[in-house]
Image (tube, rainbow, N blue to C red; front, side, top):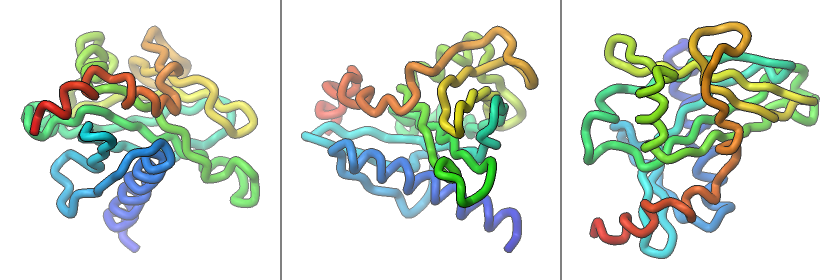
Length: 184
């Protein structure tokens, strides 16, 4: 299988992982047939949310840094801009028989936070996309801390995003909850 095919399969698996979590949290979900930047549409009680999903496989031991790429066009078009971003951190370290192997954690945050991270230069422009370097700390195969950082290696001054780790209740607390029902 080509690396492009593998990347497409992994991307779809990350989207399905997020849709599954949203279903467990009482949302209905739909995955658009064509990927134009919005990966999942979630709704509950007449509140609709556009979600962009990004995923990476992490080593799952100690600390690990991975880069996430975001298409600039998705953020420049107000109609196609996501309401929420979910960044999946999947543990692929160790052996497939380990109990934490393949476990996914999600950094769930509103896209307004994306703008703040860009203004702090923690998400930087590179050619036709944005790049975020995410540092994750694993303890016994489970993510315990997430930091957006500048550069690679040991964490440099950045933004601790741990409070957004598996924060699915952010959808219910979002000011978008009230706005989204008015869009119709």
